[in-house]
Length: 80
Image (cartoon, rainbow, N blue to C red):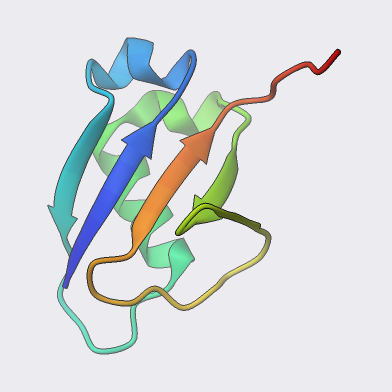
């Protein structure tokens, strides 16, 4: 399964990239699986606060992920 990951704000500082494509094996991949893979690759995510969006929709909890979904990691932001 191929998943597009996009990073925003301070998260780009320790990933050193704004986006990447990752591969995860399995038929029933979840957001938890993706997060686990990213925390292994970028340990600073374990101490960072962020939200997830799947295909430009904010999500909470452990959602299913499909092949070629776009997942964004969004740090807290202030509005005005």
